[in-house]
Image: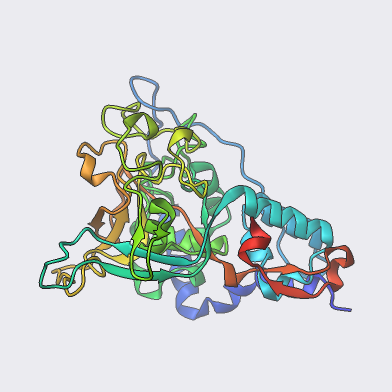
Length: 383
């Protein structure tokens, strides 16, 4: 019988095995640089947010000889890393109870986006470039909410900024500057590695594209593509083989600022990710419009209209959805695309993660626990 420990230990130790000499060197340099940083003044309560000692988020126990696999699984679930546990390589090693816990976490935390076509751009059909571009999207799960400060704090506390295997190698030198206001690893606007009091469930901001991608890898997910993000919000309905009806907003075709956190309709800053429930998408995703712009894997200007790819002096990544300080209505639609440098760490850009249906597995006979056979998750199985 296959043991539980070995595959889980392999997973937990994967980052260390992939680091290499260069990765270890950069991680050590980050620690040395942080120790050498001068002490920073503590924030006061005079007209600004306060930063206090948050309870340290529990970390998954380190894998190794004699490791408690049950505790390891529980720790990964606490860290919202259920997507790793549901990978085909590992799911057969979970008990029935562990699998159910991971599957419930998936269903609670992610919305289903079915397979189908989606149109990107708002191009003129008579334009010489050829008009809009239609993309085919495979079925996927998309986070119901943007990633929160609380969730991102677990990544920071687990040493995410020193796990070089989850970062793009070309960005390692720049990571020395991926620090907060006090020089600690973390989002730009945090202090002493912590977010402001009362903002546990606010979307994390001040993270660039590379930080968002690294977090997504850490939890076993990825950033959504342009087409995936638009499909989740616009929810296309096929009319013919070549055309589909798409929503302008997740709730319909008419702007309603009471359904989203935009300029003049919200608190003038980020709001908790569960607010504005009347603005959710058909699939159950919150705040695709408003609150914070969201990183995608797409390049700005690419794939919007046939033959119209932009040539930019510097590369820019696509962001979608608008933010709490977005004023113009046309920028707060499912179709509108804006762009930012992948190194930008702004106050109004966050992200959410995606997971392909084909990347996870489910047992046919869950009653048999770890000996059950595996099958790909289907759309009907996940509804």
